[in-house]
Image 1 (cartoon, one colour):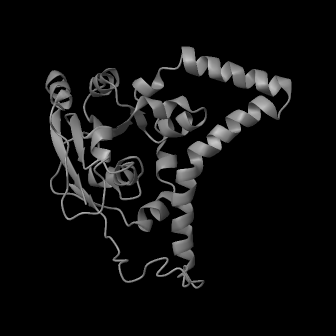
Image 2 (tube, helix red, strand yellow; image 1 turned 90 degrees about the vertical axis):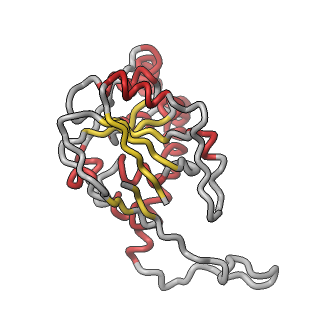
Length: 245
């Protein structure tokens, strides 16, 4: 099972072929392609927009709005637990047509190679990590490529670094997309919730992301990264390899 990305050969059309001649995007780009580009741009800008909202609520609004925001921050820092407890996945958000534009930009596709019975749990191991695992997000944090139809009964959580949950508002968006903390505590909690509850991990982590470069070779980081195997054994979960290219 893997997601497939068709790469465009741009060697013959450099965005800047010389210092005096520049090649710009054509003005007659189809509307659907504009929508695809917009969806990816919004996704990249979302954490920065949430940071702007945080600053705005501190500086540019009335004192009582700032007070409410401070209560939210206090709760987020001291009492919030859902990033490590399965989050609050909302299927209506994951099914938005917006995500089909997102997947269509690259494009991202999901290819199923075998059935996965829903009477057990799974640990999906995703390779390679890539810079920010866009293929993993498009396939497993949204329904753009039809995961719920291909694997009915599999309640999957895409796991990321805890630092992603430190941005106010952005952490709410992530948890509603079914994205959770990649800590050991989080993995065990999700897998212990019963049949079908599964997790997706980019095994290579940040170290593997540094090897993301144009090449005919795919570099995987596996040495000293066997914690996911131990978690699967402890919780009686099956391992599922996922390869992205």
